[in-house]
Amino acid sequence: MPELVERFIRNHKLDDREEYRKLLEQLEEPETAEYLRTEAVRLREQYYGKKIYIRGLIEFTNYCRNSCYYCGINRENQKAVRYRLSAEEILACCENGWRLGFRTFVLQGGEDPWITDKRLVQLVHSVKEAYPECALTLSVGERSIDSFYRLRKAGADRYLLRHETADEVHYGRLHPACMSLPVRKQCLRNLKSLGFQTGAGFMVGSPGQTYWELAEDLVFLKELQPEMVGIGPFIPHHDTRFCEEPAGSMELTLKLLSVVRILLPTVLLPATTALGTLSADGRERGLMAGANVVMPNISPKNSRKQYSLYDNKLCENEEAGEGFEALKRCVETIGYYLSMERGDALV
Ligand code: 5AD
Image (cartoon, rainbow, N blue to C red; front, side):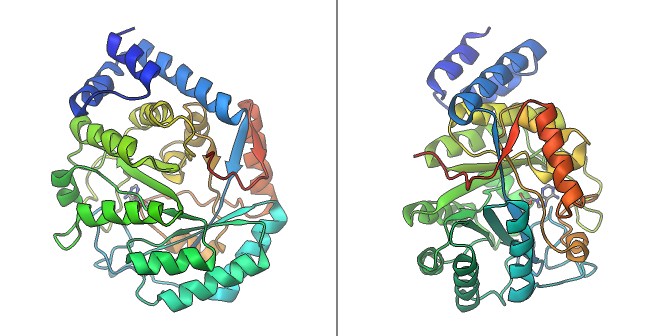
């Protein structure tokens, strides 16, 4: 194996961005990629055995004040049918999830101005009061450090905020000028400093991205040391400016999952919905590349269609007992099992 690959596996890091770029280049050799994948699976099993953690994802609002160019629920998209779940509807999702065995709920939404600190704190209190044993994850975009502090104090345990890309120029290709990468990175540092188990992450194959941009994502992740990393392929949405762009590659996404498992061996790494959307066996392949988390959608069925970040987004009926059983079986056919634990980050 190339020296660089051996060194990455030994040290869980490389010296600089250029070395990460070369690593990705060297992974074009199928044998090298397979070697790396084997190491990723070994590490994943060393720390987590055969367990797969499950998170119940509740997409509770698709209103958004941002206009990320890739995203189907960006504010410019007049065709998006907007919705917002009431606290009662959200709690009903949790109840349904609880009965199925979920012990983590992820409340995800656009940057909805209606979701003030007061309302969100109230919601966090209600969920934590009803399900004190459960972990509560928020994923509602950039907020002030004061806001993060209030949410943390209210009982939120984790926070997901993908950085999307750590390269300044590439960030500018994907976002309007009013959005800033330094602000996003600062949000992530603030979340960590407040004691949130923090999730960063990026899309693979977003328009204009090369190994050079991806290399910076790896540099950034190694420095930030997030507890969770969400990685999925870019998938075009028909009502965005990127509608004609090709989707990111499954193979490259899988390689990056393996790379991130080695970079941050104990990281909680989901096989994402976008991966499952690219191909029917996408999620399984993600788990076999080093991922150890799945996040089935437990939102009400009709709102799932409206939470349309990209085309053909997977929204199978996992909240109904039968979808859940299918997931269980699928995980078992690849030699893993669904854990009913909260699955906190290892310290
Ligand atoms: N393709 C893939 N992922 C997308 N996301 C948003 N739009 C797309 C798209 N077109 C991802 C972003 C965001 C997460 C909630 O969904 O990375 O952080």
